[in-house]
Structures are given as C-alpha cells and as structure tokens.
Image 1: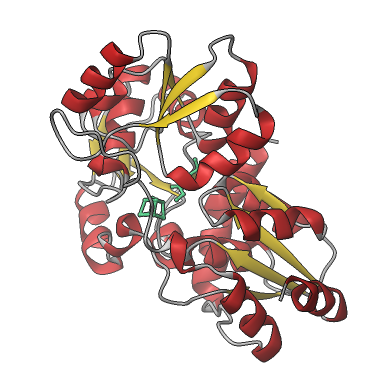
Image 2 (image 1 turned 90 degrees about the vertical axis):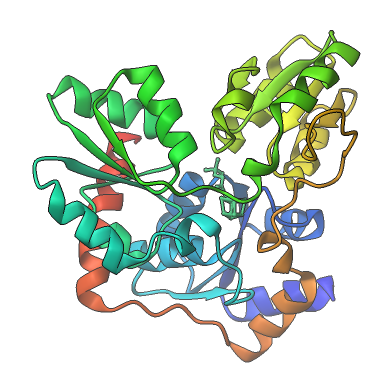
Length: 313
Ligand code: 13P
Ligand code: SF4
C-alpha cells in the first residue's frame, strides 16, 4: 500500500501534508515523500510554498480548507470529509456573525480551527503557536479583542497578555478530557517529570504545566529540556515525533478520567484517527474529497490568514 501511495503521489505531482496527531505511518509517509509533518501553521505555509498540482491533507477539515484558501490554484484533497473538529463544529457562521455584529468596536481574532466562513468574518487568524504574539501586538496597538472559538486558549492568552478579550465558549473535546486532580496525583508519582500542556486544555491543567505551547513547542521541549521524563497533555498522536526526536526519554500521557485515574491511552482525537493509509490510497486513486470554497469567502479568509503568515514570517 505504501509503495502504491508513493507511486501515485509522484504520478499526480502531489504532496502529503500531515499533522502531528495523525497515525505514525502517515507521518512517516509524508516525510519520506517530500511532504511535511507539522503544526497547523506550518502545514498552511508549506502547502502554499510547494510547487505541486495537488495537496493531500492528512488532518481535519479546517486544515484542508486553510490549504485551499492559500493555494486556490492547487487541488486540495482531504482523506475523509467527515474528519472535523469540535471547535469548528460549535462555531457556526450565523451565530458567530451575530456575535461579531454586537461588538463592532472589537478586532475579531479567530483560531485556525474554524470554518472558511468564520475565517472570512475575522480580522486575524491565529494558531496556538502564534496567538500570544498576535494578541500582544494588537493590545499594544490599543485594540480590544473578540476571540473565538476556544475558550481555554482564549483564557490562557488573556491571562498572559492582559488584553481585553471577549471569548466565544468553544472547546476541543480531546483536550477538555485532561483532568487536573489526576494530573496532580501523577506528578507526585513522577516528581522528576516535566509537564507539557497544549493550551487547548482547561485552565486548571494549564496551571500545572512546566511548558504551555503548540504541538511544535511541546516537541521542542521534549528534545531540548534536561528532564528525562515528561507528562504530556495533548493528543497522543504526537508521541511518534517526540519518540523520534528524543528516543531515550520517557513519555507519559496525562490522565483523562478524573481523580485517581490511571488512564494512559484516552487522549486521541477521533477525527484525526479517520486519517488512514487506506483512505490516503483511495483518495489518491479516485481524486475524491476535494475541497471547494466560494471565491468571495476564500478571498476574505485569505486576508485574515495572510496577516498571520506575514506576522510570523
Ligand atoms: P497546533 O498543531 O497548531 O498546536 O494545533 C493543534 C490542533 O488543534 C490540531 O488539532
Ligand atoms: Fe479539533 Fe481537538 Fe481534534 Fe484538534 S484534537 S482536531 S482541536 S477536536
């Protein structure tokens, strides 16, 4: 199957762009065929810069849409059109637009985990790796912010920057499962460990972290920090890359089942796991699952994303 996929990628002048949360086989395939495995910001940037006819996105719908917004001349295919994200699903454009209309004095900043329509309604798009710096910049320029959709990331950014932020109340169903009480117990069992937390996690969990950051920041922490043991509060798909960059370090999943729990294998996004080698092959064969975005929406969304790309260049 891997051989066939490699052959079709070449034949169709296509590149595979994968997120750190998808299964290891797809991550390896992306990296060994000239593609990339990365966080959502770099996925977007890579697709825009590479000279191919087709971008195959192993991730979730908003990642495919972002690739299409930035590369309208390329064909963008996702592996499963049902692979979505709770943050995107619970921020429908009609309600969001009404919310924005109520606060015309605020700069609208949305997380990348949103639909193309929501991005088109925004002034800025940010990712977990860029949110802090963008919001700091806006605050320094006297802006008040309307933030959507992740309330946990929004709260984290608010506390770090002291910006005036009005928060949409969305959440990631995966990161919301991490439990602070059980994490405290695990920390007692592993006092030598550093705790790494993605900022989509609840604030009580973020408060226990030694490092809070995007997927890339957490991988870099495992690679560069002196500790040999890490407790990780993010999707466990990331363990593949962490093991690769630091093969001798011990990685423990943060608990997800409440006080006293020893759950060590619950933190995985069901939508990310819809990405498989099988549907990678069938997508390449059939050309199904193409992303299309209305031109007006695409142009408006592009403006908001481009600001981020320029800001982080
Ligand atoms: P980053 O990879 O940008 O940290 O975002 C994680 C995420 O929400 C993907 O589902
Ligand atoms: Fe969305 Fe959370 Fe899944 Fe990422 S892990 S795609 S934020 S539901």
